[in-house]
Image (tube, rainbow, N blue to C red; front, side, top):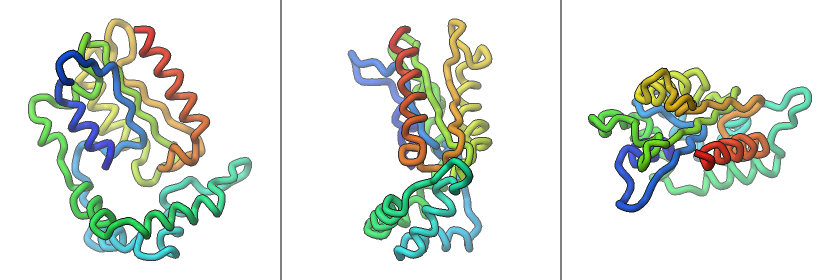
Length: 201
């Protein structure tokens, strides 16, 4: 949901005297609606109703499974996540399934499109989109097609400006939807390198 909000807000010009050099989107939901079958939507609403169900979701949906050299999240971290999920407000738990998923941000953007997400000011704005290769919530193929593809399409010149890639797409190996928890070192490296490149422009 956060990425949908960012995509909407970033479409507007920044306040006078300010400049957005670029935007970072982590495991973003596309700006288009995602309509779940009724039965699946009901399951989603109940997913955070108990610690048992919330832990199941964290282990089997939100994170990449442990395998070989990859340990996965520790049990304490999973329990803490489940407790936070169950402890959230009822309205908050239902909002994404009942409203957020179905939001058509493109319809709200109108003629502005997603251009603003690449930055304003001197026209040097860039975007970094990062996903996990084992994300079941926002699969990398869908993100590449519906977020990265749209951004690159609106950038023109095959997604390049002045010979530099306008929208960079990074896939973190062995990581699910919770990038900040599962792949924090890889994520920090990808963001740090991108910021250095943008700062030099």
